[in-house]
Amino acid sequence: MEYVEADSLEGARELIDKLDDKIVELIALRNQYIKQVAHFKNSIEEVKSEERVADIIARVRTKAIELDLSPNLINSLYTIMIDSMIESEIAEFNNARSF
Image (cartoon, rainbow, N blue to C red; front, side, top):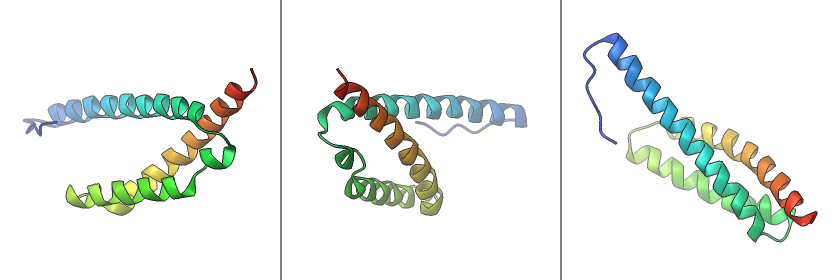
């Protein structure tokens, strides 16, 4: 992605709105992959993998620091997102096993 300098408040808000749309699209795509991953796991414990969650959080915190972004902000956002997606993955896991 490339940073663009806005020439007005409205222009800046339009750029932010476009980014928000892309962020939501990327989160939706991530959630689709999460549901796909559920089919490769053998237990709910494997779905909830605390080790994997810790690895993800550590990786995105490091990336945030590299980008001069608050690692605490990213930690909070990812914790909320991962918790929600684990619920989605558990539902997908259970649905796959019910056939």
